Image 1 (tube, rainbow, N blue to C red):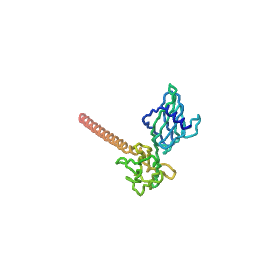
Image 2 (cartoon, rainbow, N blue to C red; image 1 turned 180 degrees about the horizontal axis):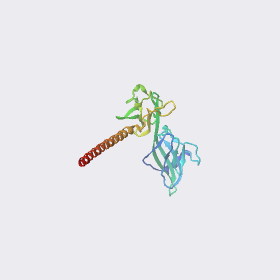
Image 3 (tube, helix red, strand yellow; image 1 turned 180 degrees about the vertical axis):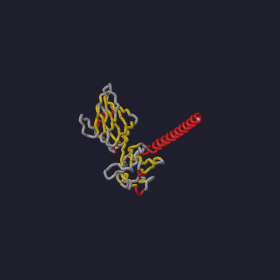
Image 4 (cartoon, helix red, strand yellow; image 1 turned 45 degrees about the vertical axis):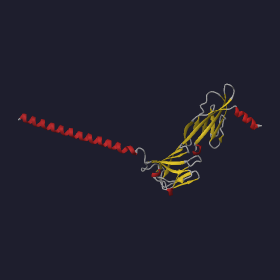
Length: 262
């Protein structure tokens, strides 16, 4: 009987789809899946990923990670890598004829992160998600494929004996400065799921950045220093030239005065 009622209910539900909306957030941060619905009488909402239904807390003071805000917006708190991917928000509302309608909003969530690794340690990236098709690293020659589903570890750009995959983690052993850069995991549609910027961490015994740390300022100190030095040198040469001309002029005037006096 319940199944029959559900089937009858679905007969009165009309479907309206929309294109995928890209959204992005930082790991540990917050992202909003905005439904953008007009001022209608919202009856219910449901959130799904490709794999499962995701419960949404609709209470005023939610303690969960996924909460409803306003009429139908959904907030995801404390973002983690596995949150990346496709989402479908079902919004049920009553139209002017008091008929139940359904709209579906589709989202693609992209997670960003930044990590720092000491030389010689392991670089661990939990980016081999169930919906990830490949992992790439941005190098001087462009994006280099490190792993692809069904092909295992390729290790292009990284020595294969230093690159392994365990569960959902891509591991680069004995991290070096050449392993720094941007890593990303992409799905089967070549859409970015996770992007991680990896830098080298160089700390002294007190935990502070040492003089060997490659800071961005290092890249402009040299050209600025050379420019300032060149300007100082030109100023000194001009001063010397003017001073020499002044002394020569004074000497000439003195001799002329002496000659006239004689």
